[in-house]
Length: 489
Ligand code: SAH
Image (cartoon, rainbow, N blue to C red; front, side, top):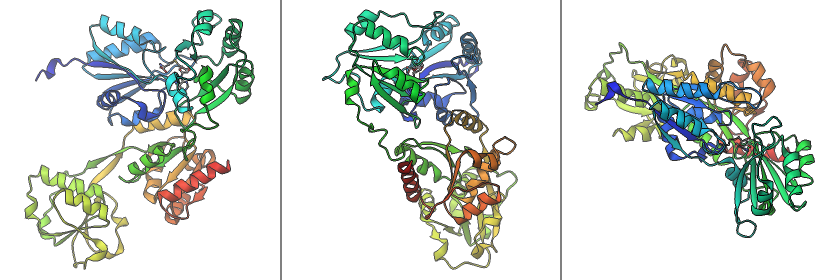
């Protein structure tokens, strides 16, 4: 159509407070389309895993004392990439309009004639209250809610707000960026007539596995926060709604709350496992991310020669059908029996309209064809080792997933590494080869959990020190192991 003069679009997207599932559907859609993502420090690194494999990821993160990219530079980048016709996402923590400088970015884009959209997000004040078990305007406690900065650009950094109006007129106040100025904030509220017993909570890293809550009142909170070493990012939530807070919120009660896991990825199944673990409250990075690349170049295979074809993996089935499609081969030309190793693979074949038998149920011929991953012939079960082997695809690590890993590591969001099978040990080690993250270093810094004896052997042979070998190699055993350990803590 009009592709030649395709203009780029910039989406200024609010990522929400942390929990990746709190992103809007619109935010999710544009993030998946993006050619370039410029993301902030407060954005959970797991979002990066949803981008396209070749998406350019730029850290526009600002640490309180260090500015990696100046605001003007970010704006220039947004414009530059859009002029190149790219789909650009500027991913910001919470809601982009709440202390997010989105207006500056929007006006720079407007001036440059670049099309843009702003996608709202859940702001930290509301997300933090909710995940700490409170609701900002519970009708018994509060009929108003204010979002207030705890910091400003003045030399002292102390916020200039109408303290009298705030103290007298608002029931629930969420102070952002307020940890450093907490003594000043509580002092102002007290000075303007607040009840010294007025409850206050500090909620750090709300909605993520690192969430911590410290509660007190206007006279005790400063000392408590200091003792607990709460730092930014945290919301100071002032108001009677704090009475709603139980010892643990619904979120903190989840059995895997506070668990920060790296699930070494091996097969298509790990996606389901990751989803299950995170639905129980864990933060889970599946690593490394890889793509399946068909290696069909120069492969002319006469499938008609075979009476039996064994598919080693689910990907081998998918790539097989893709290769038939590309070569315009009619499936009815192939008369071989299709054999798979488990019922899940049989289901996948059925989606292509083909019935399969399970390997354990068939009588094998003297010759046949095995289809699997390139270079994986040595993993073939003994009973079919006399079959010919065709490597139809390879797994290629998406380099961007290393960026996610690094960010997760720097934010101390990886406490345990889980190896579900031997292949996953190889994949992870391969992906981190040449970095400082050697098996030795990872074992020193994290716990290493292996599903079974073969996996443990593999891990040990590559230099890991295995902390836990699960009694049963399955996800339920993993969950009970993780949750029992958590209680012991
Ligand atoms: N646009 C963001 C706010 C940016 S200002 C929003 O709407 O949420 C940065 C401040 O937000 C931090 O200093 C902290 O006070 C707060 N914040 C952001 N994410 C947070 C989180 N997960 N937990 C607690 N506070 C958070």
